[in-house]
Image (cartoon, rainbow, N blue to C red):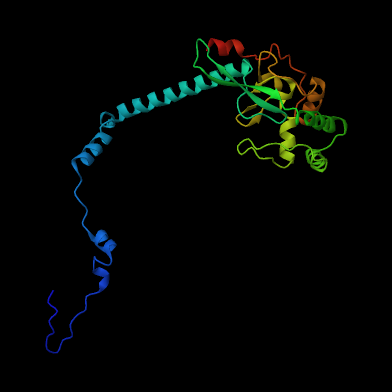
Length: 250
């Protein structure tokens, strides 16, 4: 650029912001984008290739139906696996208050090998469970009152299943303990269906006791029937599972 002074005209100064020596990022931003390489063009072509046969509406609908049926079958097998492990007495998820997890390596003949979990008694927290049920049944204390008494008497607090840190006693924690039939010594699932509580005869129980019970059955069902919207008799856990034959047939 010619910056020679002209008669009657001041020379124009070049701003240092467009000098790539001091502001290289300006030069980078104003640089024209490079043309795509051969590998990039190949990747873009391969990305659209799997969908090419389904441009037709009928073929796309058939493909969507196949994906949907695959998902349905996958969900059915998952539910069947969870049901079978529950019936065998294996615990799924974090240990409830009063118990700890005991790990077992299992190599079944007809299934995939892996870790399974049983519940064992937590000697520090197990006695607190019977106290909670006794206060609720005999003294007719509310969940909030039970939580307050547990805090005042400084009983061992529940542990967070993720961080492992002690949590404060609360109404929700007490309500969860009083509603959990695991303290009868059985593994139980399907207590709710689409968010709606189910009666005990519709629950899925383990075939036999899989761990030591912390609460007597009469005490547990007294508390449960008082809090539930229906009054159900104590289920026969040895023959629980009204849909066992249908599930095994599936």
